[in-house]
Amino acid sequence: MRYCKQCVQPDTRPKVKFDSRGVCYACKYEEDKARIDWTDREQQLQEIAARAKEKAGKGHDCIIGVSGGKDSTFQALYAREKLGLNCLLVNLAPDGITPWGAHNIENLIQQGFDTMLLRPNPKVWKKTIRHAFYKHGNPVKPTEYPLFAVSYLMALRLGVPLIIQGENPGITLGVTEGLGDDDNALNANLGATLAGGCACDWEVEGLTMKDLVWYDYPDKEELVRAGIRGIYLNYYVREWGFYHNTEFSVKHGLAGRKDHDPETCGRLNPHGSIDSDMQIVNQMLKYYKFGFGFVTDEVCYAIRECRMTRDEAIEQVKRYDGKCGERYISDFCEYIGISVEEFWRVTDGFVNKELFSKDSKTGVWKPRFEVGVDLDEA
Ligand SMILES: [Zn+2]
Image 1: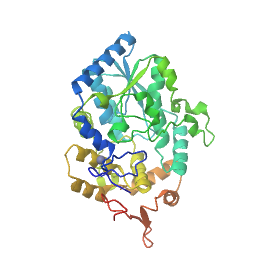
Image 2 (image 1 turned 180 degrees about the vertical axis):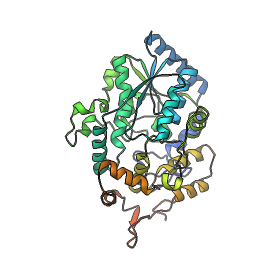
Image 3 (image 1 turned 90 degrees about the horizontal axis):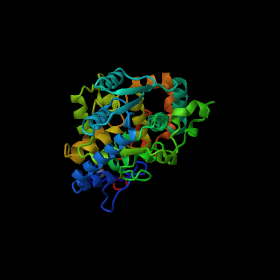
Image 4 (image 1 turned 120 degrees about the vertical axis):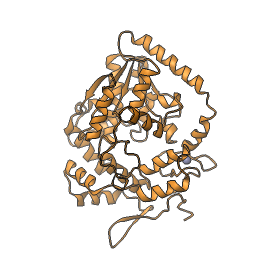
C-alpha cells in the first residue's frame, strides 16, 4: 500500500491514479484548479442553463437527485439562485431513514421546490442489501443504483432536458477511469460503485427485472437521442467542496447527526451521509477491505484546502478511521436478519489479510500498516 505524498489517500482505492511524483490525481486537480479560467466555466454553465430553459418551455428546466444533504442542498439552491432554473427535485428515500435525514430533506423542500418523493419497494431494497453484503461485503452497493438511475429515468419520462449532478468523483477522488475528469454526467453509472453495472446484477433471491425498474440506468444513447444533458456542478463551480458545501448548507438549515461521535460513526463531520446508519457499517467494511474508511476521505479534503497538516490528518485517521459502534452493527444484522456472529464470520472473509492480521487472543483485526507510511517501506 502506497500513500499519496501530499494527502493520505492510499493506492488501495479502486481505480485511483497517481502521477510520477507519487501524488494522487485528486491533489493534482487541486493544483490545476488555480490554472482554470473559472469565469469562462461560469459563462459556459450559464449558457447550458439558458439552453435548458429554452428547451424546457413550460416544464421543469432541470432535475436534481437530492437526499437533502450538504451537497444536494447546495446544488438545488445554486441551480435556482445562480442559474435561475426551475428545478424538479427527485428524492429517493432510503429504507430506515434517520430522523436527521428526514429533517434535512424536508428542510430542503421547504426552501421552495417541486419535489418527487420516491420510495423503492423496501422488500426489494432489503433483499439486494443482504445479497450485496454476502457477495461484495458492500451492503450500500445496490442502493447506489436507484439513487443514480431515477434522475435519468425521470428526465426521460418527463422530458426534462438537464440533469445536474454534484461532483465527478473522477475529479474529487482522482478515480478518472470510466468517469473522465470533465462535466459529462451521462457517464455517472461508470463510477467505482456501479462500474457500468446493470440492474440485472440484482436479479437475486427471486427478484426479476420487473422488481428493479428504478435500478435500471437508462441506455446512454437513449438519453443523447432525447437531447438530455447531464452535468457535474463541481466542474463549473470553483467553491464546490466538502467543507464549503457543509458550511453553506448548515447556514440554510442542514442539521447534523444528534448522536454524532467519531468513535462510533467513523467520521469527523456530523453533517455527512447521515440519512442512513448503514453507511457507517459500510465504511467499516471498506476499511477492512482497502485499509481506509471515511475519515481518510475527510482529512484528504482538509489537507488539500490547507485546513489540516498531513501529520494532523494522520493522527485523526489513526484514531477514528473504520470505527463503527456496536449498535450500528447489531441494527444492521437485525435488518437483514442475521446474527452478529454471522456478520463477523462473513466480514472476516472480506478482510484484506495483507493489510490486517487477527489478534489471536482478542479476535480483533489489527492493521499491519502504519497510516501515511508506504507498507513496503514500513
Ligand atoms: Zn493526494
